Length: 96
Image (cartoon, rainbow, N blue to C red):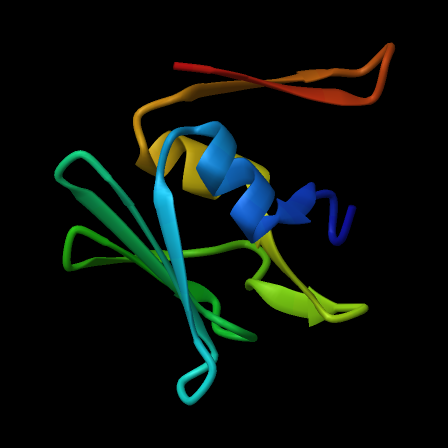
């Protein structure tokens, strides 16, 4: 959790949502594709591109311990999922 936002490993969340994932080492950008939706996040940028539209993030994608982390709610909602926070169990619930 960073600035009250849950960050999750990019590959794990995108693949769990059924998306394909690509990492561009040169631009430090992770891109995920699901059906006709395309999401791109550049490391340390507060912007995310969703189907060629720029969205502002509360917390940027970042690399921690060699893992690319992305804000769970922002990327899940960009793919049309609903996201809930279970305070009791400190768990993110993502539903398609």
